Image: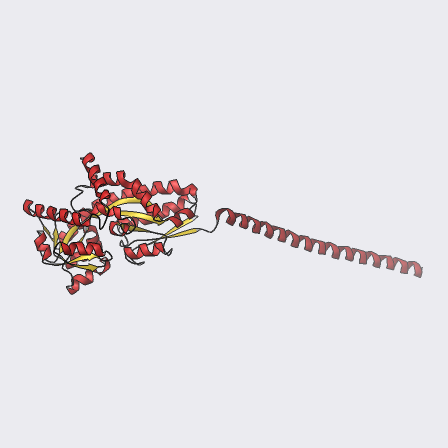
Length: 365
């Protein structure tokens, strides 16, 4: 009886041990299975991430700079363009806009793009001409007489210009009108001789341009545009030339009393990228980006024309006097423009560029 009881107890013990062993093994298997499952899931996620980065790569960040003040049409348009590019690329491309000249003046922007420290910029024709000199032919005084003529020239001449920019390592996204140059001064300037009596600021960085002004009999000084306010305040300069919208935006009108009414030449603006940056953008987005950039260029041109009128009205309200030019004075200004063009051709830009523009204008007119 006792033996039977012992045998039964032993059997129960064996059964309990067997059950415990099986439970332990099962738990171990379940734990290992769970670990294996987690590892497999982590491995799957890792594989998916690798595939994603292999397909899409890191997000592309494009740094785009301008000397235009924050809130100006150029700044607003660049920010709108940045938003559209982010949208059409599904977040693959982020464009960061740096306004107010915080990256430097326009010559600095060109230099930094060449060094690979900046991806793109919105520039005006003096700086654009440091890349493609032909473009400066558009600045020939009194060559272009209206915004419609200017728009026609840009439309007809843009493709050859784009090709030349690409040869220099840049891609033009769009061209646009950025206003018309007028003379501003601390004293009334009606004729070229009135201007010769003053100290004239000439944008720094172009020694040939400076020498041309001096050969025409002007007391010209090279000065970066961000330094115009200081130059006027200290008496270093008494006069400069710029679009009214720029004068209003930078607040220079508070230091001058006069604007000559005669528009000298239109100002060309462009948004450009380095070719290296353009080639990093997936080709699938190229056509769409060009399309929305052209829309941006048209928007800038329209906004610039409106802003020009508003800026002049603002300056008049602030006390700036518009000096009207009579026919005799206008003839003197146009003669000065012709003399300047003769000196500029072959020095600032090749003669063929001016020939092309004159032929296009003859066709248009």
